[in-house]
Amino acid sequence: MITTTGLRKVYHSRGRETAALDGVDLHVREGEVYGVVGRSGAGKSTLIRCVNMLERPTSGTVEVAGTDLTALAGRSRRANAALRAARSQIGMVFQHFNLLSARTVQDNVELPLEILGVSGQERSRKALELLDLVGLTDKAKAYPAQLSGGQKQRVGIARALAGDPKVLLSDEATSALDPETTRSILQLLRDLNQQLGLTVLLITHEMDVVKAVCDSAALMKGGRVVESGTVTELLATPGSELAQELFPVGGEPSEEGRTVVDLTFHGEAATQPVISQLSRTYNIDISILGAAMETIGGRQIGRMRIELPGRFEENVVPIGFLREKGLQVDVAPVGAAAGRKADSTLVKEAAK
Ligand SMILES: Nc1ncnc2c1ncn2[C@@H]1O[C@H](COP(=O)(O)OP(=O)(O)OP(=O)(O)O)[C@@H](O)[C@H]1O
Ligand SMILES: [Mg+2]
Image (cartoon, protein in one colour):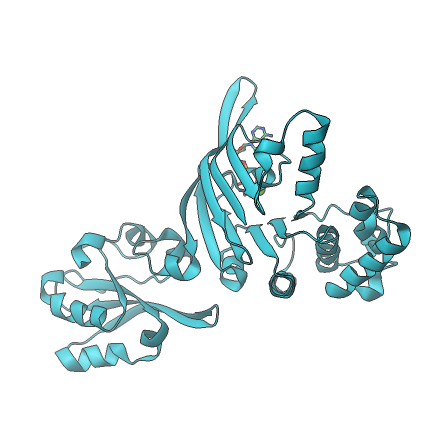
């Protein structure tokens, strides 16, 4: 539904060049909620602004709903008209809502329809239908200043849906909201995704947002996508930074000369008493250093960091047992302090 290929955006300011995007290949499938995360300055907003052509990419292509937007972005009037039409397939939600304070809620939602030249009666019918969809029927005649942050964002979402877009882009739509309101807005995005088959590309710096609503995610660093995939795929990728951020398991080893192992449980394995089986089968004492269990997309997934007595060489058989049970097993490097640092440098080879 959204594909970017080799997307680059270079800004020139005060004689300096900044490559905000440095070759981004992103693929968002139809009907999915896709989260892009990354530190401040990673290029997330630039990416989303290039996807809807608010910003023209320096090079590379952007395809949305089968149309190559970069090819349309010409100087001619015809090209501009075609680009406008293609852009009506894309709705955009902003962090600071961007509502017009002198207009009522309903008039704010009608604004894009006015621009599209829709008649008054049809505009008002559509606006009321959208306000119903976002649960704000009773606020149609209110002004933005009379609304809470969450309600303002609902208006922002209704307005973004006015042109019946196929794709909704959201740049930090919930980061000005408290946690409870954030949850309700995320639930709304999820509902719209399911009811309308809307594809959602959202930018966030909160991992909880990804956990709550995203089917897939990408991690951006320095203008590049360094990891991407479905959440389940990411969790199944040894050493994935996103997986570790989504499912932080920490815990320090109790002493030297022990083997620290990170386990990821998927599907069936998540509900089996694997640890007690391991302990009984090999008659070893196992310490649990950290654990997290969650339901993602209706499936149980858990991560656990355990400690086995003895060095890696002495634990080859128990580790093999865990693999056989369908667990993903990452062995932490010998002598490395546990915690975040060790996680990103998990020894993948040693465990194979
Ligand atoms: N209009 C601009 N002119 C010059 N440099 C820019 C411009 N917009 C963004 N940049 C630079 O491009 C890089 C990426 O910026 P961008 O806004 O995409 O980051 P971001 O990931 O959205 O960050 P944040 O999480 O803080 O919103 C930054 O180094 C930024 O300073
Ligand atoms: Mg940003």
